[in-house]
Image 1 (cartoon, each protein chain N blue to C red):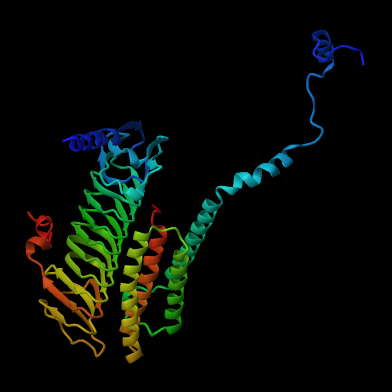
Image 2: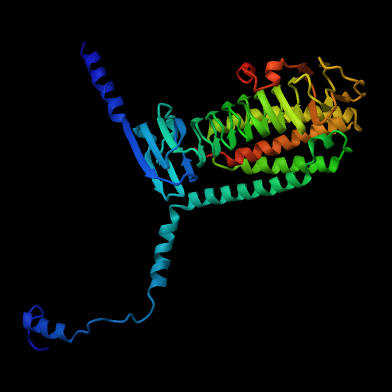
Length: 167
Length: 304
């Protein structure tokens, strides 16, 4: 020890002059800093991320179903004369069910959900009525065409619902 | 007396404080792509001859903050921080765009009243409605419960609504309309292709179909009424398994056991398909003045 007090100006100046003008960091500190910041930074937008992921999934699902419907759909005139394709009807119905399940987990307003539900009842009633008629007359291409159209309308309606702006 | 004064003091300042005056302008190209997002209330969209984008009007404070900007080729207008839960229906904004611009409008609770557009219009809303007059090149509209009304020679039109009524007057070219329960009412049309589809709504058509063109009308439980030019030539496929088929045209043949009638009127040329599971199909001859839209009063006389 020199006996000088640490706050002595001369002492401080002499030591300050010895200090380097810059110091290279001994190692890359940023990964550790980022690691400590990351949990807090990501905690808040987690719900938003989930919503974004759900929206992306819904859009992807909608696109897949669009491709499916476009690939499978016949010209309207041809529908009435086409043979009854029960497997195709079942696939279309399944596509609609998947779309409806996807919408169930999306962030739609209650009023919007009510409108969707009301219209799905209308479509499902039409499907059930066509299905009963086709069961009674299994060979009718007209009834098959109407049933297929009702299923397609259900899928297209659910696709529209997936595109709705969120309030 | 005192409570009344207090009440007035509380109420009177609110409309003054709650309104924000909007007046924003920028230069854009004549065919700019303009996106209008999340506006609320009624928006009047006007196509004009100037190459500039203008937004004027008043918004309630709770309508949020207006953002406005972009480049000359792509601009964006919208609201952020909007409390749509309080339904800001008193908002009225006028948006002026170059008439050949491509305009996209999206919003949960926005209604659109558009005129003077000659470019493309794309509109998606949940609870809003759409009214368009003029001759946009294309109109694409989706609304869950709102009505859609388009009047003018739109060349390509796509409309989808669940419970809303669709009214179209004087449309041209290519047409697709889909509803769940809303009626589809069309007058003064002259189309090359039309697909009209509803589940429980009625379909009423009055218009001409170009030679080689197609008209497909389908409803599950509604009626279909087709008013056609008396001189129209068309191949018909009419299906009404549970309802009747009536016609002012002379139709050869009879419906099959499944309720389908395939026949022709005139010398054929166009293709008309109409199907209803529970409703009835009516073919009517429209008056000559409506059959020829160029005739005086041709289009105006077609609205229902």
